[in-house]
Image (cartoon, rainbow, N blue to C red; front, side):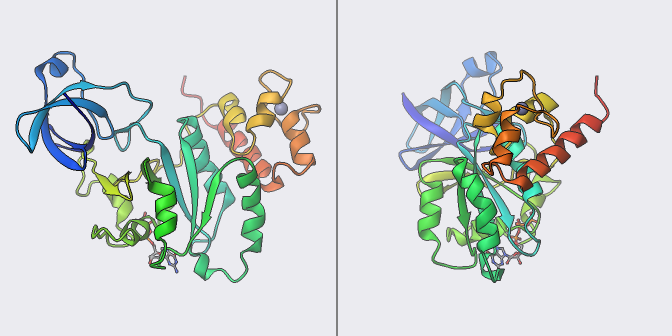
Length: 291
Ligand SMILES: Nc1nc2c(ncn2[C@@H]2O[C@H](COP(=O)(O)OP(=O)(O)OP(=O)(O)O)[C@@H](O)[C@H]2O)c(=O)[nH]1
Ligand SMILES: [Zn+2]
């Protein structure tokens, strides 16, 4: 038996990458009997029927899965947010981070259009807090052809999904990989819409020794978390939220003795991040309850 990873699902066929070769596989009867539907990113055991084809016998346990796009075992989500055109918004960044952290996946912060910024220091200042909180942050000019090292550092050995605002530079990111997979800029996010993709059709690009989904994730910014979850997973809050002695503390402005408030006062969490948190918290508190 061979081990591989599903890199593409099309019309009931599964393309399994194993030792740099792609095998066109069907699902074994046993999988179908158990109603196990393999998805892209699944690590599988498969039997070869010839040197190009085979059938999947077993799907290994998934460490996570996203619904849109339907992919499994995502190691990281790369958040592509521009510094200019459109103007950087830490609020927008935080919302993406919340969604990713809620799925217990590592976010990578990729800030594009560095070349359009005269003075990077204000952005570096705010991003320092995120770096201190353990996030990997990249300032990049995606139009520069010398980004090989950055791509290598980000992508190697990982299963990655891209996300980010429209016009932030996701297509440009992919085109910059230099793998001849050309997407018209501005067209990328349509991949999730009615366009060429049916909902079950995702392809992983085999790049820099890693796999990158050709379809963006988390395209909607409607947060699906409740107040308590938000207060626990909010970017840069982590250790302080865990330490907060009040069970169920929402770290509001009037919560005296709250560790998160203390961290904000001691400038360990950016005021701006905390301000975003309070706004998002209010949005969640004010949204109509679904039950
Ligand atoms: N100067 C500069 N322009 C960039 C950079 N990254 C992207 N762009 C430009 O920004 C515009 C939008 O980039 P896209 O790659 O289409 O953005 P996208 O995220 O794929 O957008 P959607 O498909 O709408 O989601 C294009 O004109 C790109 O050429 C960068 O680092 N520097
Ligand atoms: Zn608190």
